[in-house]
Image 1 (spheres, rainbow, N blue to C red):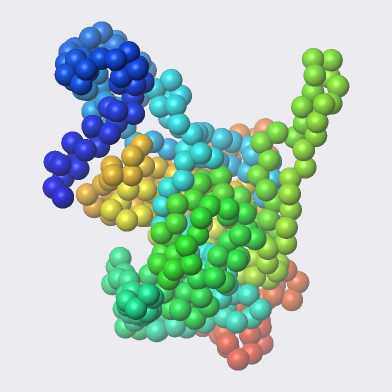
Image 2 (spheres, rainbow, N blue to C red):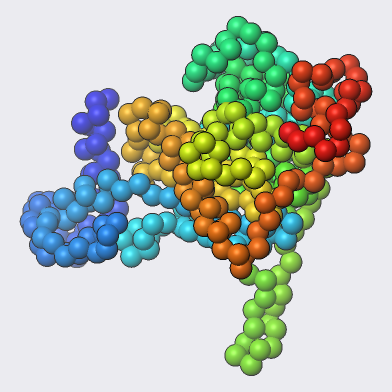
Length: 397
C-alpha cells in the first residue's frame, strides 16, 4: 500500500472517531452534509507547544494538524514501595484525551528482551559473560521457519557475550535464547513480574512483538531494582473523608519473581546498555555519571520509541509515538527509542538530581553477598567456575 493511501485511510478513520462526526451522525445528517462540514473553515482553538492558538481552519485540516504531534507517556515509581512518584499520561488532556500509561498498549520492541535474558540467567544456566555465536538462527513454528535479522552488523559471525548482546540489542542472540529456553518460559517470568497483557507463545515474542502498557513495563522493570521482588505500582495509599477519617488503605501486592542474584545479574546486563550500548548517550550527551541500568526499545516500522531507566531509588519508563501506530518515522535513526524516549528520561532525571529536596541518591545497586564482580568481568570470567577469579569487592562494573 502506498504512503498516500495509508495517510488517507488514517485521516478518514480519525474523522470517524471524532466527537464532531459522531454527533452529526447521531443527528441524522447525510454523508454529503458531514463531508461538507468537515471541509468548511470555522473559528477554532488548536494546540501548540507554545500555548493554545485561536485560528480558522476546517475540521479536516484540524485533524491533519494535530496528527503531526508526537505523544508521550511517563511513569516513575519507587521499586521498594511501589509508590508512583510521577505520572504523565499525555502531552495535553484538553486536546488529546487519552492515557498513554495505563490504558494504551503499544508494541514494546527490545524493552521486552530483559525478560528473555532473565530466563537464561536463572539457576546458573548462563551468565552475563557467557558467549554465544552471533549468527542467524531459524526456528520452526507451524511448519514455517522464522529467521529474524539484526538491525546492525555489530560482530556478526563472531562470538559475543550476553552482556554485549543486550547492550547492542542483537536480535540473533535473542532468537538463540528463545530457541533454547522456549516462549512459555519467558511468558512465565513476565507474568511473575506483573505483565498481564496478552503474550502469544511464539518465537517472535523475544523481539518484543506484544502490546503492553507503560504501567506494566515500569512495574516489571522495578523488579530488578528491588532484588527480584515484584511490587505492584501503587497510585493511592489511602482515602480519607473531609474530617480526616481513614476510609480505606491500600498496600501493593508483592511477589518473589526471581532470586536476588538473578536480578543483580540483569542489572549488570542493563548497565552495559548505558555504558557501551544503545543507551550510551546518557553518559556522553547528557552527562549522567551515576550507576544506571536501562533498555531502549524501537518497534516495527519505527512507530514506537521506549526507554526504561533504572536507578536504586527510582525506576522510570518512557514511551513516545504517534497517537496512531500507523504514524511512523522513515528511518530508525530518527524513530529509535534512544532518540525519542531516552532524552525525556535524561532531562527528567537531571531535574530530579538538581532538586535537593527530593534527596534521590546517586549510589549503586546493592550487590548480593557471594556474587562477585567476576560475573561481569569477561576478561577473567570462567563459565566452568564462575566466581573463582572474583575481583575485589571495591571494583565497579
